[in-house]
Image (cartoon, rainbow, N blue to C red; front, side, top):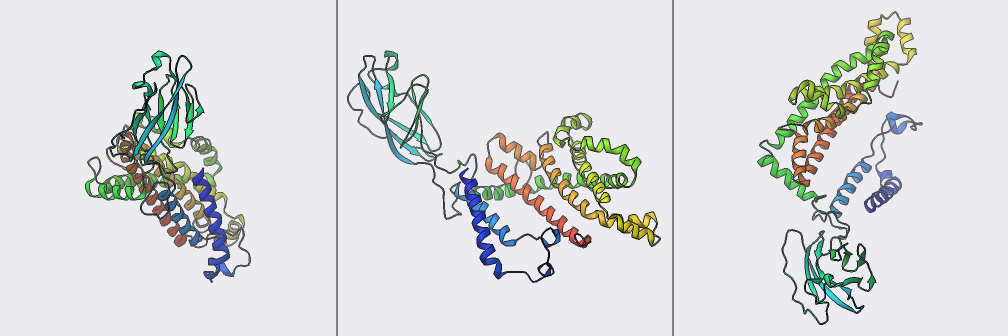
Length: 421
């Protein structure tokens, strides 16, 4: 919740600063800037580079700040490390009470620490020591060296003066102290706001892991082989899905017979997630490469079919009438009117289909794959190697974003009339 609030606050502050200040210094002087009406004109809406840069920097700073990264100047409060203490009150069977102090030494995870030298004190409740790693908790048998134990009927009734019963807990300056159902103590030092590396490692740990796996490999294959095989599967499955889906979408958009025949099939399969088909594909095609390609083919097929059909349905009918009035044949209308005007929808569908294929290939590689980004993530998760998992996710996102940029460039080159007709 804290991270979300900070993110929203930075977004609002950056918006106000850029809109009122920096943007005035970098106003565009191009075709879009000369338009008198831009609201609702998709061709006039372009990514604000200031917003893109600030967005990426914000995510990086939040990531580093809440993981204690050395690459960012500001950090969120981290876990407590050092010496602290709390006092508990023991009540004997006869109603008499005595206090004892637990002297605690909290050390960094992965390091060792020695117990503190203490004076056990006087009375039937004796002082004790405890060493615990940051972000961890530890059980304390408080009566291990007391003169009156739980077997004698002794019980803890207060922590730092705050009443407590078995099964309850108390928040103290030293951290959280809980009394278990059996009457022993469970101590947890303050964790702060930073994430433990096992849940979210800092950026430098992920970068170091990239360099390590790029040079030494992972699970008998190099990093580039893992990513290359995933990319190969995605591209091949997408091409096959597009090669079948686009002609099928055109046929459904131009022929009532094709629309009636295939519409129930397409509309039935469209909401079925590709991951639900994995067991069936394994039964039919096995766990080899053919099964993964078939799954990716099905992931792209329905998206490309619907986008092509929508592209045909969205062609302005006045253009078709104008072409007929000039004596154009059906083939010429298809070639010069329908295909050019449906390409924007097809490119949009292709970008969506490619994203779905990336998500599907990772899941497909979780099942009996020897190489691939999904296999790498799956194996790393078994051993709680969060840095490897995060590395795989980031690389998949970067490659997917790069492919999307290529699609945008191809669309600008092949469909320069988009939004202008």
